[in-house]
Image (tube, one colour):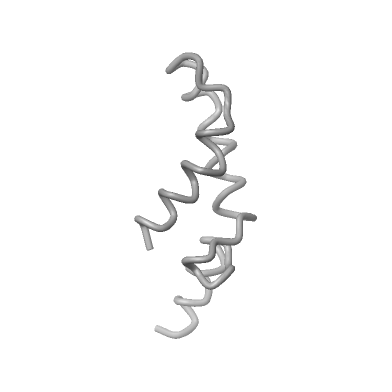
Length: 61
């Protein structure tokens, strides 16, 4: 799951973000992670967000 999430995160946030400096990237990371984890459907996660996937896994274990 981690590899799939990393590719999607990089494609959807890092490549489209303001990455002109390391400082600017670090400032944006918390918002990017929050948005990704809570709202971004991922094909590798059967079109669920990471939060939904984790929640569903906790119901089955």
